[in-house]
Length: 411
Length: 165
Image (cartoon, rainbow over all chains, first blue to last red; front, side, top):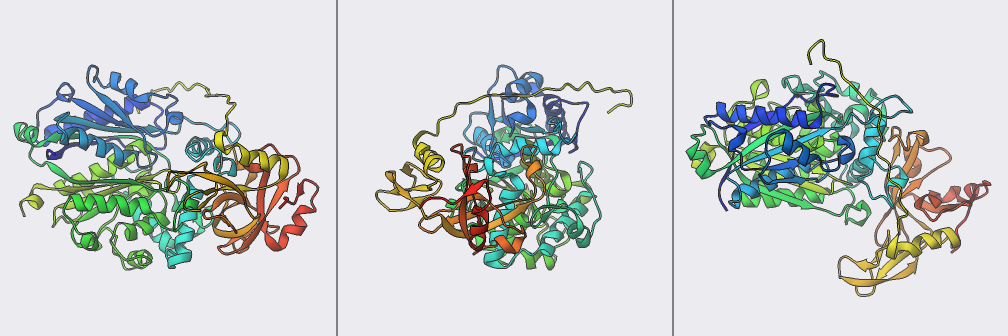
């Protein structure tokens, strides 16, 4: 396989609602930002130089359009070139990066656009006069329609079932430990200008927020968001030809799906998709799962819900099973902790614009490795980062991406 | 967004009607509706009992046989939902749980109710029993579970009845 680098990152602000943009207009904005970033990074390209696109768009019902990719393809001026859509629930972004990587690594494309967008809040619930219940309904159609949807299953109740089972088995995370994730990620978002939910809050604020699904409370849950995020991926030959100053190399790509029927799993409280995706990605990058915490500088995790971020610390190999809660109590994943997790604010701080989310987190990690993350920049010593995407019923989908800067590869 | 920008929003909906076949799983729904029985499927080779039923074993790539399941089981994990989708917000609060019926090998997601619906009533390890609606449609909503010690009280309500085992 050929080496693949991220040479440009474009992320629009994550907002509750763009009244002045459609999904394809947002996609255009992110594409233009990514091209501009690549050019600041030494390249001199326009959209005409791009050879192919991989689109990450989760939910047709949000976009009110069942083949949204072809309409974006027209709007961003990519006619007469290949464009492929990926849809993998909440993990759409991570899976889209994986497939864009594959386009370049295989030689099918040497300059590939990896573009995710989602615009959920055009959904509208007439009974309550608000958007959220209808957005949740559009998502709930991703549950099994025969056995699960009729029970009133939705994203939060699906994930909380795993978290409750995990706590029953391993004693972690407690409600207070989960609340610390919310405090951390809302707080980190205060340093990130694209974030939707920057907030300085306390554990008590989280504990006192309204109950959603026992024991998840409002501030344990990410907000659904509207945004687009875009990466430009290039082959090694193209990186040299374009004289890119700070390419960020994708050195590990892992994805795995576990059983979408939670009740079929050996242990209900495990996120098997996460550990399996992580092991594939780390192995490809030549990293040891048991030493991963000491091998990377930063992790952009998929914190759809606080308790699930804590379990991810364990499944991704940062700490042993049952110790995720203690690790956040000790400050491990904090902005200045031993391994900062979600310095961008993650989904809880930035918002969750599903198809864009995993591309945003991968782009954020790449900017960290370039030293271009802005006010939430963390110390980069090893030159290595990961991004993590999960989604689907009971977190059935997962993707993990390992990235390294030039200095890391020279070592 | 510029100050003088004015958005134009339209009301719209996407609506599709179905006459959806349950295919190989049809018997499960027919038995619920007509006979108040819960059927799973057992692999001819490995003996695993799948619930929800599968006519093929995804582990062995062999066919499975129908097998009647017990209507009692144990909660593996649960939650109480206090905010929900546009379709279910009228029903809050409601309980859902993954329930392992006594002779099944996998757990089924189902509604779980209690006279006083609090987390301690539906926690892991709680024994539960199935209650059937009198008006059944051959859907998952034809039945639900309650704590075993409340079963007698629930089946006395006019709209519900016990299953047949």
